[in-house]
Image (cartoon, rainbow, N blue to C red):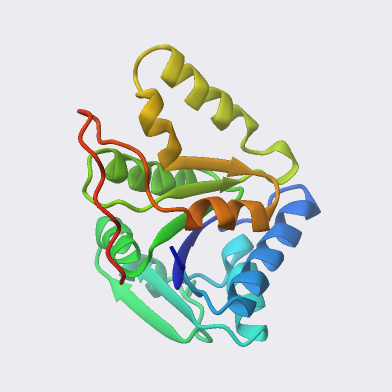
Amino acid sequence: MALNTIAVFCGSSFGTDPAFADAARLTGRTLAERGIDVVYGGGHVGLMGVVADAAIEAGGRVVGVIPRQLDDRELAHRGVTELHVVESMHERKQLMADLSQAFIALPGGAGTLEEIAEQWTWAQLTIHAKPSGFLDVAGFWAPMRQMLDSMVSSGFVRTEQSGIVSFDDDLDALLEKLSAPPSWTDKWGAPTAPAPTP
């Protein structure tokens, strides 16, 4: 499956390890160079701003989606290709999902985890058939990978559904995994329909 748009979830802070910003810069640049539109949270701060700036500098198309409350605090990136100001966090996540074919989580906090977890859940429930991936920068997402293994071994996630989520410390490898046709079943064992093209 050729990917034309990917949503990137990541921190609105830089974090303590310079590797986080390096990975954000690489992600924005790589997606732009591959002709993949970047959909992201619309901010100019932290790793979010790094992803957007790198994609813009590489000639890519960047679509920001930001709640009005954050736009009012002047946190929106005014240099993106397209900026959507929505009324709530739920609308933000819904629109980002509608605009994207897959999702990548870079390092971040509770918001990043909540955003990627919701898309993972929606795929599990066949609300959509779009994969999610964690770019495991400097081992940041290793505990999340262990948690998924625990969810599977404890019977809360079906083994055949674990393919909804991919982990890799190499961006190219992660993009390859996200490009594969969906092969998982839904929570009750029904096959997943192909993801629609935005």
